[in-house]
Length: 141
Image (cartoon, rainbow, N blue to C red):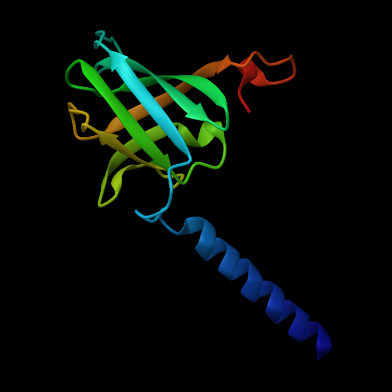
């Protein structure tokens, strides 16, 4: 009978952890990263227009490609819910907190980005600064 009690507590702990990890970022939560976008769009054969951005996260800068931007942009995005740099990748769609991807990361751009189809796709290209030693794929964790 004692093993059932431990199993029950373990299941409850796992369920609680799953709820915490799946919970959306709260609007009052402090941003953990920022994205600076200050470039003109460049046409793409992959569909949608591209702009570059630089994400600052934990004292490092990462180069990003943003696809789906409708016009030249100069904006800053506050990022919430980011646990590791690669979580920024994916398709972001509008939510009540800004733009959100399936990893639970939200971005609120100020001023807002004008999107061609109402969604934004972000790709992490590489870590820019500081330089990292070998062992990481393209210097990205």
